[in-house]
Length: 309
Image (cartoon, rainbow, N blue to C red; front, side, top):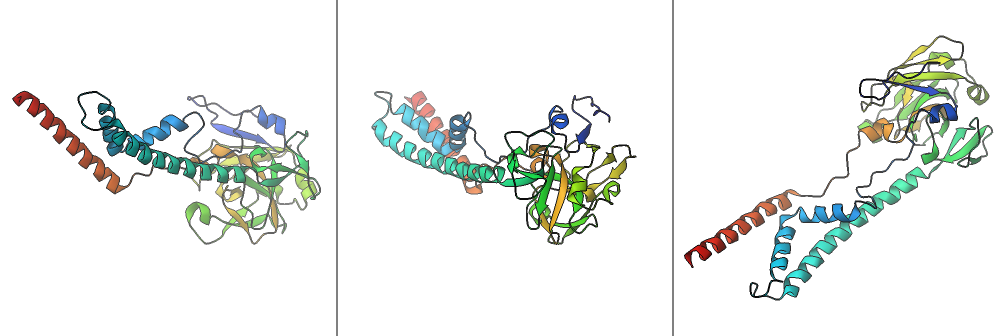
């Protein structure tokens, strides 16, 4: 089997995935299947959350007023009358942002820890536990790795981008709903590559030896190109009809087994994700300009009064 070529940016231009060979795929350095949608981390929580609050010029303006109030002989008001309201407003804003991010983190944790079934790897590790389905082991979604053969049942969400190997109706065909990805309600048909059209049981799937060579991770939902070669056989072409996307749902098929080709932040749904937006309404944008205009007017008044005095 060949090795992935390297493009001028130092990234693999072709991804090579060996069927159910955890060690061979691990040394290639593919990303794990952990997926997070949070805005903050433990490192950037305080500075980034404070920055989000003081993007509102009104908060920044009243902070300047609070600082000036601590200078003796300049401010006629007590510092507490300026500091306390500012702390309340900024504190509530911080608490809201942190809570919303906590909800996202809890949803991410639940998704990453969902139990999934994969065909037993060539070497047992601490992440695997026994299952009731012969030939499979149970792992958490976050522990699915590129090269694993994953079992998905009717109504389940695909935990990674998978290449279809076998479907329970033995036709090499399954139907999926991609409404979570593109909003389309009609079911899409996915096909197993011609190289595995004669596979008729899970035991035969587990016995497959081969390799997939495909494009590097790409954000386009409907673009997938590559080849699939069983050991000792000629490669066959792959396209988007062979790929089951993370986030889509299996329909009208009792179960399928698919090869994990892209995991985690390499999946198409992750490549299309945007960073969690900062809540900054049109009203707040207008308010920023109003407060800035007031600040400039007051500054001009003070400078003019000093000159005239």
